[in-house]
Image (cartoon, rainbow, N blue to C red; front, side):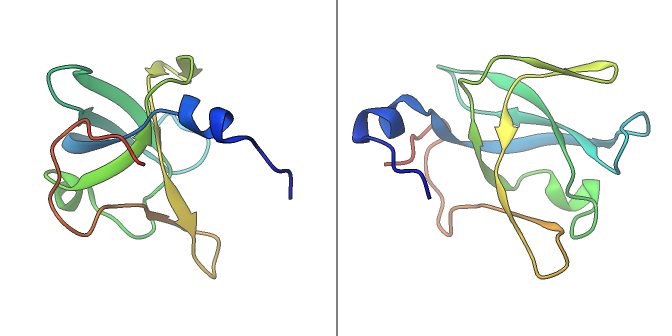
Length: 112
């Protein structure tokens, strides 16, 4: 495992956002959803492509808090421009399970 400095870690903007919309992304190479995530007034709403279809339905995602990297460069994914990276962990089958706070926190809060 490569070690990083504390300075490297503090440069990653891992923030809490609330999913405000989730739609199927049929143009994606692997099954995915297009998420609209609200990070509060300072950051606003950002779009993300998320390969989380194994464990989640779009209607179950709306209102859910997620943790995402908000300071990566935008990335073109098919016809959409992804503006953040929603984080998760692979389960035993290799499917993504979202990384979420277990209590409510203000939108835009930074992971410490």
